[in-house]
Image 1 (cartoon, rainbow, N blue to C red):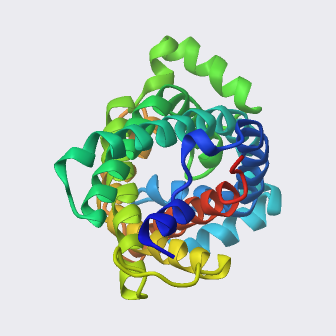
Image 2 (cartoon, rainbow, N blue to C red):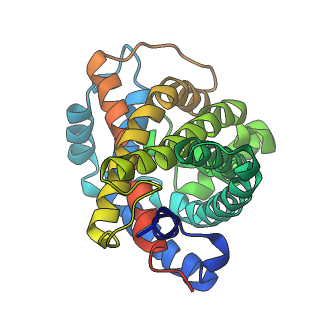
Length: 299
């Protein structure tokens, strides 16, 4: 297979997608994966808002505390709110990502960059643009869900669901309260998304070259399992890279959105490592679930 054919196999173009399947199947897959990974977000958020007086300061102690007081449902606090907002947010994100990426690839063609460099730039531009477009919906949902995640934890207020949180935010801060930490959210996720997608796009091409699928080679088409393995490896590399940028800002953002005053508290080394691992896993699952269904949605 020539490189151009390989590129067509591993890069799904927007104009070739079946848009109905893209949105319907995609929403179902994202919902299913979110169910499995949501407890990680709850644990991460609680670790990020821990203070010096908090008893549960490790991931294991947070899990034990949740299971002891609320059982398994406690690991899904705010899940309904997140799903309600996640589907339209993902639709906006993926639409902006794919359309911008296609345009960026065409825009960069005259510059004759190497294939990994062109992929890094195009994916980086697309990732940042998609993140910026989705923040308007993501941030209010993030604010509400985080308050639900930490309710009753370390003295935090308790709520009767997402609507109760929304009413109290409006009563206290007005509409502005839904966008608490908006600037930090943009600063956190836009560069992170750019770095993640840039690393993801370029690392895949480098891996393909190492596997003998360079620009000047021909051969049998790679199997679907090989494609998925390369994409997953790219997800690991990009997740580790972006985590270094995301974690510190995400911790500050979470505290700003949960507290009315930003409290500064240094997390333990183990907690920082655990947060990096969580971001790594979450970024990787984005890669895998996107690749898993986009491959089957070409018209």
